[in-house]
Each structure stands twice: as C-alpha cells, then as structure tokens.
Length: 466
Image (tube, rainbow, N blue to C red):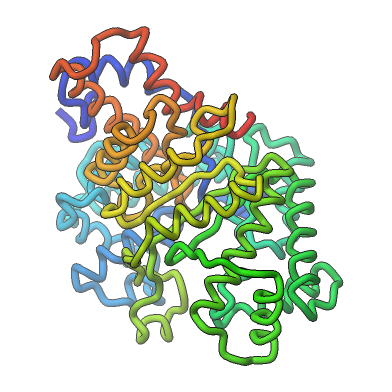
C-alpha cells in the first residue's frame, strides 16, 4: 500500500465514513494566505518544482538548516536542481514532522507521485514533477482551480494599489481573490519601519500626516479603498496582545514623539496600539468586515541571519507574554464597550494559552443572529500539525461550540499547500470518529454530517457573507 492512501490518518471506520462521505469533496475557502496576487494575475507558470515548492517556504528552510545544509542551497545562489536535491536528502530526516506528511500529500495530490522522496528517488521525482509543471494546466490559476478553491484572501499592505486584484476582477477569474487589510507597520510605533510607513501612507493618500488625527484619517481612507476593491477582512499580526487605557491626547502626544524621533515608552506604545486597533475596529464594524488577530510570534531572532537575509527568513518562534488573559479580554472589551466589536478571529501561536483564548471568546458572543461571532482560529504556523490541530479543536470544543468553527486556512505562500486543508479535514474526521467510537458522541449522521460540513466549508461561507 502507498504511504498516502485513501484512508491516510483515518484510524477508525467512523473517521473513514465521515471523511469520504462529507468532508472530502467540499470546496475550499482560503480566507487567510500569503499568495502573491501578481502571480495569480499573471497566471505564473513555474519553471520547476524548486521554484514552486521551495522558494519562500520557511518550514522547509528550517528543516534544511537543522540538517546542516549550507545556506547556499537554501536561500543562496545554488542552481534550482541542486536545491531540490538537498531537500530530497533532507526529507527522510523529517519523520515525525508534518513536513514529511505535507511533502508526500502534495506529490500525490498534484503530480500523482506515490514514490517516497529521498536521495535515491530525487532524479526521478524531479523529472516527473517538472514534466507536469511544463504543461499549461499547472499554471498558478489552474493549480488553484485544481484544488477546488472558491475564495482566496491575500494579505496586503494598506498602501498597496491592489492593481492585481482589480485585474483579476476585470478579467473575471472564476475564483474570488480579495485583499486583506494588514496594517502591522502602521501599528508598531516603536519598529524601525513605522516612519517609513507613515511616509508611504502620506504619499499614497496625498495627505500631510503631521499629527495623530490626520494619520488615522489616512488609514481609514485606505480601509475605504480596500472596501471598494472587495476587501472585507483585516488582519493584525501582534507579537503580544496590547491593552492600555488611553485618552486621545495621550496618543496624540505619543504620535508626535515618534515623528520627532523621541523615545516612545512601552506603556505609551500599548496605549497607541490599543487606540489604533479600537479606531480601526470601529471602521471594520461599520463596513461589515471581519477582524483577524494573529498573536504570539517573536520574529527575526537570529541577528546574524537577519542582517544577511532580511526579515521573514525562517528565524521566528513562539512568544510568551505576561497577563495575556487580562490584555486580550481588555482589548476586546474596549471595543465592545464602545459598541464596535466586529466579527473577530483570534489565532494564538502559543498553545499554552489555548484555553485562555477559548474562554475569552465566549465573553463576547453577545450579538443575536451571529453564530460564533468571536472565533478561536485554527492551529496556526507552528500549530498546524496533527497534535497542534487536535489541541486547538479540543480547547475550542470544551470552551465553546465546535459546530460554529470556521475551519482551516493555508497561511501559505505556496500554490500547492491546499493539501493542508485535506490534512486538517482528515485530522478533524479522525478526532470526531474517535469520540464516536469511544461512545462520547452519538453515531448519528443528523448530528455528524452538519458538524463536519459546517467546519470544512459552510461556516466560513456564512461567516464571511459569501
């Protein structure tokens, strides 16, 4: 039997039935990813498996480094085939890591390759995968369509002109590709990129951003611009959850200090972040948007490699935080009190806080007619593993209502990472199947079918008003 077979990860008969009867054929709503809108708009044809598979994949880069591979073969100037061969040498060493599963799921799903990747099979798989990629059916858009995707939300800077989204809409690409407003650079007031962002925002809006009020007016103008191009989601990436009480005068002074190069204290930073998120949350609520909050990453930890390669090169890890429960509740409560808490998805990178997130979201499920207004987002980044997904699902089911969960996303830059939705669906069905087999959940399809189908597709369709 092939390693990736029909019942892969499905360990009991109920799991097999749930997956094959209900989950397997449902479309995919990828409401958070990092795909390039330009590559979709230009319908990029990938020259080989390395360009498609290894470029920009931090998971694989970390595994290569852990195996002692020289950076020359990872992000360096080595030929694409040389990089692929180094990855093939590394794959057998990833046993126990989800990379081993993802690698072979992707080879099977997109190229029909069931051979295990390793140094002895690398040449054969290189030739076979590249033979497929040379065909028009394996361009960026066709890979998306092959994957049964109906919606993609990319991740976009507020100053982006969104011209590729407009092009896709004009051309009528059958898969919706919509922008997501990601204002991190405009929130991180102590980060070196903040003043550069202010300059870019000033340029794109034609406004002189000389104080906090004009700054926020410009940000809100960009929210409107995204809305006009179809954007209905925002995303905030936060190392730690901020919350501090503030007055408008407080944040005005803080903004002016930042503009003049004065030091902004950590408390002033928290006030500023709380104020900006609150103001944006009001705009999201008024426009019917969903606000996503990804928190818990500590980034670019290796100074030597940051100076060599720049940001987002695979040197990030899980963060911790004092008083995360107090701050998370405080941030959501400040929006609720002012009457503008939008639909919100909370993604937690530190699984230690899963139960905190699960119980916090339940404090704010107060809007009649919306099921699961506040969501505990799927296992993210270091948690989109079998163990990580199961922990998230269990915390959510015990603290909230699993029936209303909006399910999986890719959070990926790869056009063939949609096998992660399959991976998630198999893990979900196996977990629910275990509950049934253990007598903890009735073996009743009038209950089980909507549970599986809602999580895999229909909840997201409703939640994002599709």
